[in-house]
Image (cartoon, rainbow, N blue to C red; front, side, top):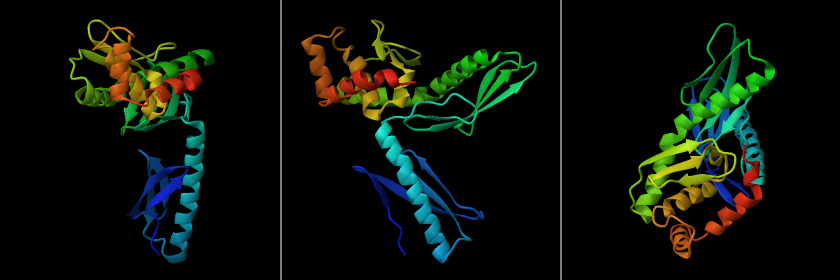
Length: 241
């Protein structure tokens, strides 16, 4: 029987991809908004249909939670998952004697933290978060540059000196007189349009280094529904990890 090409959750249709594998087991994952089913070649007929049905129910429940929560805060602990716009990092923590604490990124999304065993429990929690954030900011910088370049070319055509993610507890973005743009690392866990709004906001400062009517006109031209993103930030921005 033909399998569905999309999984509808709320008002969103998520594409489904089916990939046959030589393994004896099948698996399902959600990546970049696509439900990916890897189906064992050894599962045929009714057994295969049962697996597909089970996996799609799992994906539907998982996506319903995402829809309700609107975002997923990072889990800075052993076995935790850190979900950004374009990647899910799987975090493991090793505690070993006589080593320098550091973070390693393997295969693009396996984030391994190595900690010195002499650290206290409180120090470990703080160190895990610090090292994970630093590694993810480094890994996600090309994504930030890509988004800013796209928006700049489409709406502003201005020179940008440097762009970076920053750890911030208050402001979500900034633009300096030297044309450097900083975006809060926390926005990697906000809805994508909210992230893009803050990028538009800071790029608009390259046109108007203030919050005048002319500044907001640039914002609205680039993103007509920007007030929805502003409303989200006011109402839920403080929840971002």
